[in-house]
Length: 368
Image (tube, rainbow, N blue to C red):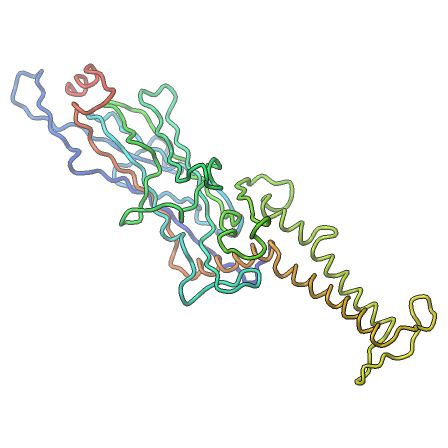
């Protein structure tokens, strides 16, 4: 796809922070020591990115570069993982992973709107979609956390596994949880949870919101997250491209219509200022006997066909996609470096509330 502007480098960095709450440093009295010694329970929540040193976990934070510092262009896609663990902490802990994609929301303003497929005043969002998976190590003591879904069954995006940041209500800091329920690590657990973040620049998830003719009624687009393709582009864009550029497509129909007008003028000439067509032969090389009014009627029909074919091109789904992507790319380039943030939070579960933990595990935690 060729955009009408040159896409500048769009560096998108993702900052991963591991937040340890002060109230998690719980104090336990070792009832088995026979002394009055007060012990501080070990707290070892840590995380690492896939590019960090193997086996090295960090307790305060690390940089997780989702887009790997490369230029991001329409229809790009990728994935990146990070892993976190309880690290054998003496106490059971609940954890949560939150995401902040505030930089990838609406790109238009009240003063600056987009023109999409010839229709003005349209809003554009950064056309990114995300999918999250969560896995836990083989032989784990605890269970893998469940990943959230912001959609109900009535949503066109339900069941695709992908979500748009614009569909999620964040907290005051712009974060939202990507996990369901209250997952956790049991006391002494060395289990490791791996979160994989998949991303795509996928305008098929956003184009219907513009309400342009190319996507209204029966023309509404079905969001397609498939990145596998037998052509040059992802399936959603390839379909629009073939409709426009394929054999017998919109572009060919426009060329045929223009050629028909040109051929008519080559054969019949053009009328003078008084509207009189010059004497000439028709296609059979016989003198043309059409009246001036008939010439005008035939020419007008051909010219109207050409105008309609041109309008079909200008209002096509392909042009709608290109207009949307061009505006989005330019708006993102004008921003400061765009960030997507992830935050890991851990909180101690008091022993009496540690659902599912046996007394044996709790006792072993106290002995350490």
